[in-house]
Length: 408
Ligand SMILES: C[S@@+](CC[C@H](N)C(=O)[O-])C[C@H]1O[C@@H](n2cnc3c(N)ncnc32)[C@H](O)[C@@H]1O
Image (cartoon, rainbow, N blue to C red; front, side, top):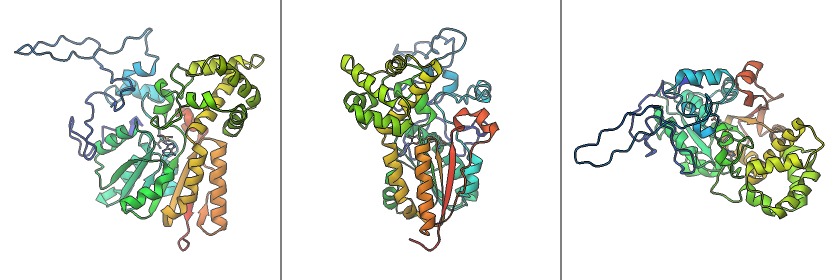
């Protein structure tokens, strides 16, 4: 990502001014925090100099100190102030990325060149990025559809109210004004409605990069990670109920077992469902660490490695239910053909066999019915180099389809 720095190529940026169309003033030295539950931007001067009081004696805010942490390097998400501000700490950020890690508070887009290859976005075309995330794919699509000042445009959708304004602001700062780029907080199952409201009709290019972003995954306050303690939340849109803790408090044992099987093929689904339902009667399960420890304790005969795999699978299964990920994908696949213009291209990146199965099936049926004129024969996967540089790419599967010209 740093190779295509978000700040180095800004086109019409005015530092400290609201990015056009967003009303959001980009924080001068750090990641933006539109949500009070997010860690505050970290100041970067380890030895702040005292600020002289101005004439008249009114108080001047003290410069923020960098966070204190034990050891040589910060370990906690919110302490990683250099990663939250990679444009200031270019060399450190490049070193971290070269080691295969994703900078805290960012997301590395996966299979970018392959996606551009199959979508083939052309100047002047209309694109939809159904899962805007950090905007890595959207930026590359926007560069293509607006090349040479062509009147191309991109609609970016995301359900995440915390990350969406930050991403919109970043893309505005790169010079994509509100004619070229529209950001909407919406489930991608609402894509047809939003396209209709905008009067854009159909799209030439549609991308969906499913699952969660690294920003969501890495921030313990969002409750997606069991590696650090946090509230058991797991919602991409925290404004919608229920959270994972609320769902786990009331779900029946049989439904829990079914969710663990369908969402993660969990081999110990029955034991875990029974054990978790018993455990919650003693104490509500509200924290990520608490759930992870409970799962390990319910599988005492298994190796530590097996236990950790079950922890990972249970978190994934609960995330899929809480965000209704399969329901949203099914609805989106049904409305997709109506959103693609003749010859329009769609690419879908999945990270889970249940998602890939749905996409593969919908594309096959669409091909048989003449809705699509061509579909991917095989999935496209990240090569060894990308997998090494970004381990999160290793489970990604890319499929594509082309809308037939004469079928509605
Ligand atoms: C893997 S990330 C996308 C990363 C993005 N391609 C990039 O380059 O930064 C997935 C994003 O999809 C969003 N998302 C997941 N399910 C969604 C849905 N049903 N509707 C809209 N957005 C969704 C998540 O909030 C997350 O931001």
